[in-house]
Length: 104
Image (cartoon, rainbow, N blue to C red; front, side, top):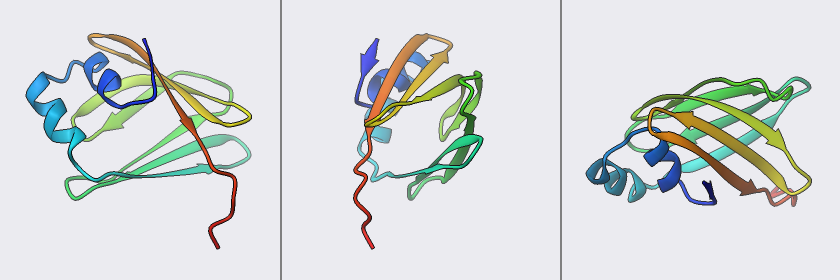
């Protein structure tokens, strides 16, 4: 499944309907960082903060969320990032476009 939302990713990870609705109503801040060798995704919420690093080679690695783990890989695009998540209940692709404007 291709998605720009988090619900399909949570579904692929095997998260039940009630937990998905609670998680989707949390205010989550995503921070993206790119180094020479990896893409770093930080998620900050009132429940839990997570940091995941993905190799730019596209290698699949363990991906930690507030509700569990899955396997994931990333691919950088001209407009942002594509994350492929392989969970217990299936596979989904999440895309995020990144505004390249410097907020400073």
